[in-house]
Length: 237
Image (cartoon, rainbow, N blue to C red; front, side, top):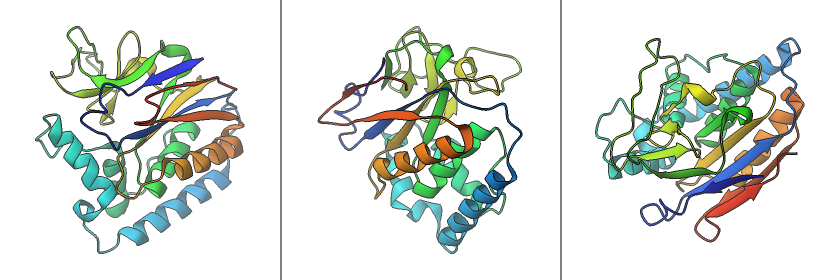
């Protein structure tokens, strides 16, 4: 059983809706299918066409995240939501990075539905999970930092955390190395995050479940935490 709690941030962000998605056993050992790359290319092409002639700041789905970041003290423009960073790459003609089958699947869902999506190796997290404000003693080791330095969040910052550590800083800006998805991951826990702006987490989760089934061979189970149900539980399939 995996629990997600968003109660602490609801007073500041009453429109937040976050889907908690747990996978069954992932099949990540097979060679990368060419059809997956074709499917990713199609998603990127569609997203790029929709962004043509449109400034990212004009997109309601991104404005809500910019406002949220500002509300908890982020002023630097270099700190943007994960979905904005992906859409910026697409708009610049750089497409989506090819990282890993599982990561590629959720990145595709992210840009298609304009929602931040993140994933952690279920074997490397310690539930319960929560989106909450930073606390004294929180630790964070940025994914890809060669120095492996502790870079704890700032007071008041919204973080995604398990019972032991921060999993992601600045809500969905950057992931901790200690729970990152790798080719050895066998089960994962994902979040699909919405702050309104015309985004629909149910539609995004439906797409995510289909992509994980088709390309990773995994069943999924999910629930949505929101104002009416700030604590949800999911049994991994």
